[in-house]
Image (cartoon, rainbow over all chains, first blue to last red; front, side, top):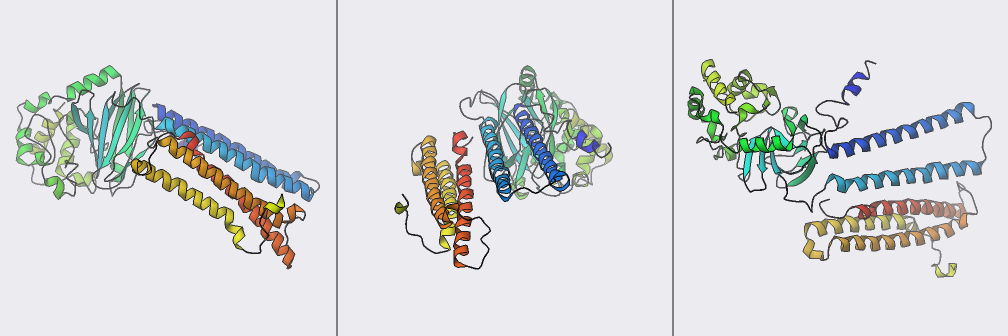
Length: 335
Length: 127
């Protein structure tokens, strides 16, 4: 029982293909169960046959009979099963990549993978866009098309509960289409080893009711009210040059300075660090790593690499605890 | 009917005919589809032209493999003797090679069908 616990635990939760919350994941889960059941039946049959041959069979069969068994069991049967499985998987493929006719009707989401975070841009049908990072939101019941790129090396975009994975390859734009069917908070994870904090490159994926999603986008398309709240944090944020890499709507923090190139980013990506316009309302800090509260924000600012090895954000040992708290409080206020 | 077939020759090369047809068919399908999807104007036509082209190639490849199998069947004495053909004689060597060629032809036949199977389901480069 104890041995099966990890296996059973992996059948549900926020990051399981076997507990699908989307149309593509449902298809993949069905494929998995069909393969598993089929594999088990064949395995049981082969074991029964070998038991029969070694234990229960009384007399040997003729050479002609043996030839027939080899022909039917060793040639016809595997060819039939493999043909059926291949046809089923191929038949499934267009369903997993349903692009084409209905293009341009819904929200398109562009995601750029970087060591070790995600730049996210929501392109709305009316031509406007909303920039975010390290969190994906999508409407339930509406097909969302993702454009996937990479700023440095190969990453892979995977929300197991919603669908299959798709690589993000430098110099290429890969496409992925997802249809969430069940509201909920799921977890996405980089699925291609990309450096020492690869395992910490995750994100929450939130499937919302379409009306809530629209309201969320509408709110995110304007600067957060917290930007103008009187705070020492804002001034410290600017003084320390945080805005060189991080953009914050409504401030002079652009986040698209050449520092991005200095950090090895491609100019095309035009981004050096995660957008922080509404960082206070995100569920996590550090790309799915810590719960989003002021303490975690302060810790991350002080020395991000101690939480996330290989993080390209510099440490700020010169900031006093009070200063860190002030910046964290201002950021947390960016709702 | 057997007069239509070429004279039987004794060479190891006949053993590889079917796998070579399989390999050439595989390359033609994949290289053709890759070029078509990356540079559609180079080859012309739409995706269905590509699918029909692959079907034609597949029928040709399967026909060649069937001919190779028929020749192999003749070399094997039309199945009159049973394997393993293990004696150190010229006749057994021939029968063994015919039998092996026949099996390889069967494998290549199935493989060519598997290579071509996606054209039944895939209707677009990005899908």
